[in-house]
Image (cartoon, rainbow, N blue to C red; front, side, top):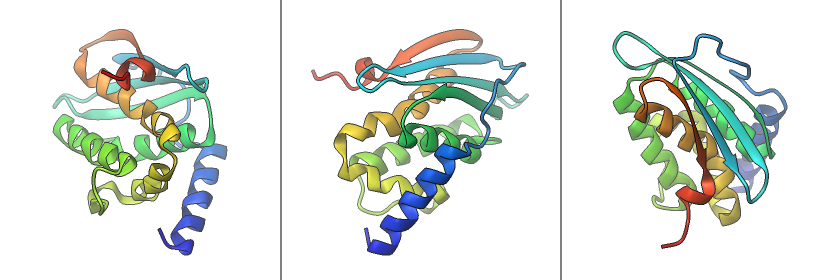
Length: 158
């Protein structure tokens, strides 16, 4: 990344971690997922409400963690609200490739999430960036209720 993009990356991370968007309890959530990253202590509680078409009508999160995990959750909820399940899963794959280095160019569909590309320079922080995404992936897999995910299970070595 260029020095200008590096600076913008840092500014966006700090802004979203200090003032996360869609932060709070979603009282009428159809699905609640608790996610944690035991390696660093990041924790997220994600609430999702689905629309009649099965898409994400509303999504909010609470929890605590490093600036990257909080910023990633904030940016993710802004981008995914109102999207279909297929769009969410497409963005999940694109974001995963973005932060793990699976692609050189960030897809335009990710919008501001493209700034998270800087995470790939810090492999130990990929779990932080992916925590909220793993939680939304789990939310799509279940119809109702609560569940827990952990980055340790998702990224365990074979």
